[in-house]
Amino acid sequence: MPRLILCADDFAFSPAVSGVIADLAADGRLNATSCMAVLPNWRADSAMLAGAPDTLAIGLHLVLTGETPLTKMSKLAPGGTLPAINPLGRMAARRALPLDEIALEIRAQFDAFEEAMGRAPDFVDGHQHSHALPGIREIVLAETLLRAPEAWLRTCEDRLGAMLSRPFRGKALASAFHSRGFRAAAAAHGLACNDSFAGHYGFAGDYAKVFPSFLRRPAGTHLVMCHPGSGSRDGDTIAAARLQEAAALATLPIADLAAAQGLTFPA
Image (cartoon, one colour):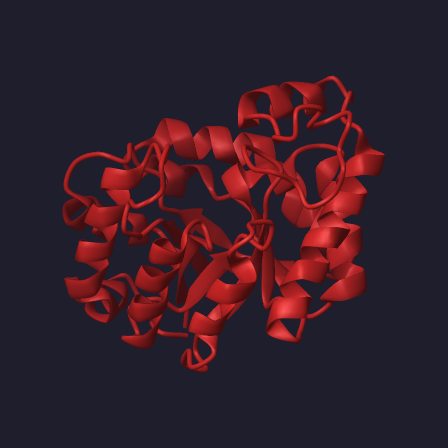
């Protein structure tokens, strides 16, 4: 039977965001979270996951945008801050990325995850889906095969009809376009990916109303991203949305909504 993986991105974005995610996981409202091991509070925040349910998959959220890297990146982050996603994407399209620096940074983020958790991640993805960009994806796949060969990876690829059946199809199509070929590349390395993907919306409006649409047209392993939190970090552009998502996920009948679409949850 198809299963729903409901993944809270951005664990360690701030201690307060981590606390919200940990509480939702403890209550069985999530079955995956993706961790920003690049951030200085990651090691301390990781302790919040010590008592997490066995059903919670804990993954590595590789960060190559907007934050301070763990390694010295004089080419990609000359001022000490990683670029935004659009400039990074343009560099990838031009094959102008400093892949040597990126490989060292990705390795360092794997190290930081393992040092805190004492094990490899259950899955690997990327902040703003940057892990799927050309050039970067090859590094991510190779490092995952070396460090976490049993892990699965996130792809934003999905069937066209499924993406068109959900709202905010433009965002979904754009993410799928940038991820095109990722599943096949992962399979060539013997690595698995999710079968379908959803969770795109405008970070505004009533999240409880839009959430059920993310469950439409699932495939075998249906991954839905979410971003619950407390909205407590300065400069957080989706602070209000994090609060809405947290409130909705705490009360929605997620298992029933999933079952109505032929999905098991938690799984």
